[in-house]
Length: 140
Image (cartoon, rainbow, N blue to C red; front, side, top):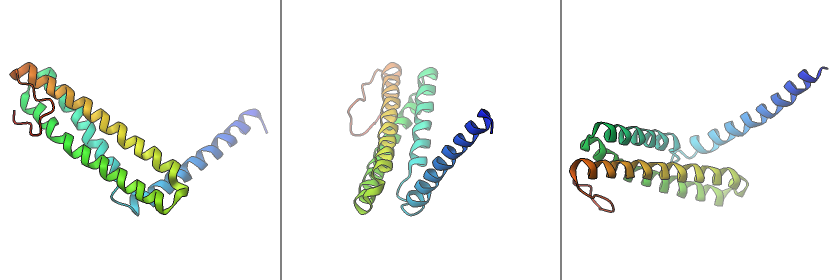
């Protein structure tokens, strides 16, 4: 066996182990606990970032306002994911490390959404001269 073949074998074993972990997470959490909606959350956050930057560049207040309205959705998704994962960890403590990773993913996605919201708020201030930060209802 050459050194190259040994490296390939070791890398393949690691990839197989990681693939099994991914399949476990998918099968156990996404299928059994369909309350976890990380893909939807990620898509919403991606859309918010895109819209907030477009709104800023094009000076479009309605597009910026749509970002503000999406922020509540992302906050609810983060809370829902967190609650589901805490419940899952209580039922099966062996999944705590993976669940914590997913909680952190949701937390970081929510923070990205907050940054997109800040850009949208700055856009509304720039275009309309209105400060909408910390308002309960974005009525601009």
